[in-house]
Length: 268
Image (cartoon, rainbow, N blue to C red; front, side, top):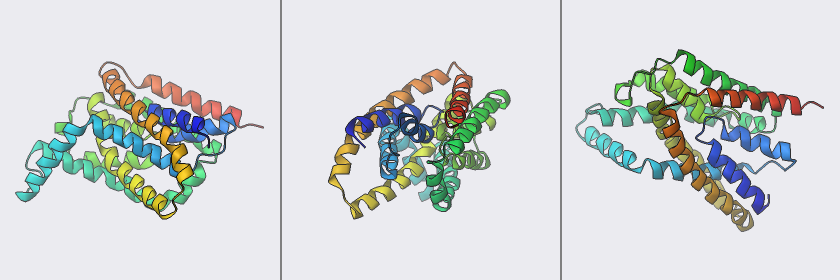
């Protein structure tokens, strides 16, 4: 991987991690279409860590408020004491399905990154989920109205997104809307619930890098990580504003286009 490739892939990660069009799918298919070698799995995880830094920065005040509320509620031996402590607990609950899926399906997921037909299929699934959420989602709840079962169901949608082409934000926003959340509330829940799972994946990968340090790789990765962090922050800010007044159909059509394009281009 060259520095230029690292920067381009970092920008793609930043644009697609929080827009509901699948960062993993783009990071798998763009090198394939350009004739580049597959990016190392460590790079794929670390650019997600850069995106994690962006979402933590964007929601820093929310994270602090929710954490304080949960700690206070736990000291009172009532984690559902307030709306804020309940939401914090539900966000943690929603991460469990994706954590379990990641532990047991890691090898299969890595193999899917090298299979264009699988990536195309999952892009089409993302397109269907987004359209389904717009068609069936009632969109009348705020985050204060969510309950534990609804949070767990949204977490199951996040678990689907370990496959390349299946957007994490697209799946979880769709899951939230199908549970009655308004679009901006569904996006906020999706982004906040992504923090623990992205942190865990990044932490494990960084530990592996420490065990097998390669300074040249890290120097090549760094420009991509910076690009990913900056573009991720801007993407979050733009998407929250966009969803206040617009539907998900444009992203659904885009994922449909990407899935069909990959199917066509992979033909001999």
